[in-house]
Length: 574
Image: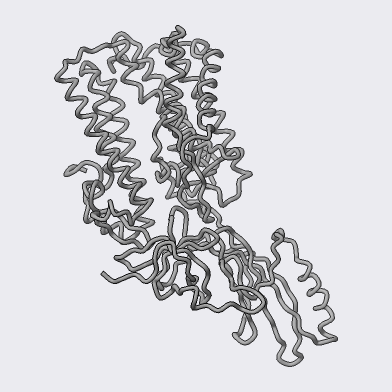
């Protein structure tokens, strides 16, 4: 194995991709296979560089009158001021140049042109590490300025000097340009403000998911109705499908203000637990502007506190069968709250910067209301999507920061209804059914159900833990036995372990657990197995979405992975 020249934690100088300039960086890790170093610049940017693009600090001499640049955010020769200006406002220096340019025909003196550009972030949304290996870099569609902001310049090497600059946050650069008239040596002063923004390009109509606009319309109105029909079926003496549809209650019987107040109290208590300064704080995947949002992982503590509150209430004689007797009213209260929250999320998204919008948004009002326009809506540090994903309806599920829900889908009606209504009332569907339709289970059968449940949990937990550990630290010695496929994004795909068994082993574990939860209901009616049927359809559809995104992101590497691991969820079946 070739020896490495630089050690982890060593401070050196790294060449910025596409330039001859070196900046102060810290060595984070070294990949012995690709012989690439992962380095971190002072502005937080992480890249992978070849060894010959890294120099020790001793090889650089201090310049007179100042030090060399130590961050891509500061460039030698740049005279840009630190005070920010709006896109349409001309700097004072530029206005003075424009005034002097008016007298250039008389004095025939030199003038300079200042052109401001916003830098280009190297990696698209979702990549945690950028890779530079000397190959040409591809330019994304949203890196191209709008047509009405483009101007063409014919520049010669002798008459132009361009200083480019990189920062993970969109900033501007100053490019000093000289235009010389060959006869009169007259210089014209001019300023152009070109903004290369990280806009979320609306997806095309054929790329819309869930059946497009008609599909999401049916989902938004059909799912709440279907949910109430299922709950009403469960309360019948004979929940056979032959008795569908069940008798419908009057609307006033489904709404109770007190129940809505209890639901709000539950929501606010979980929000309070979420805000407690306990548990570790971790960073999410990088956003399109290079930022990493911080998340506090304290779901386990919230679960303990919730259990303590419920235990205290039971000790004080609080009757919790109130929840069962008002189950339909709670479902309606949650649905109303979900609709109000979705309207708020859609309205506030129009005040969010375009770089904060979801890559799944389309520009269609109905579709965006469903899928969500804003990717990570926050009130201060309170992350609305992260909270609703994990607390009110499904507490304790913490390994979600790299899932499609967090990194791709916006927060709209789809996730709000799923998190606050569908999950708590459908995932507890079997228990709700058994209250009215008890079923005797023998000890041997109960033992088999427990074993099946544990097998599903081991697969689910093991697969997710392996994936998260690999994404967090691919160089972890504990993962050195795993085989990988290198991708053009700089990341590696696991092709062994759980992820060499099937392409989505976590989904397989989920479905096994879903079956184990339904088996105690017996086989007298198919209704309690709706959860298994629905969950299978959901995960097959979600797997198709994952496949589409991964193929678009990893290209040939994903095709190789599919050849190595041919089965998607079920071994030898699908």
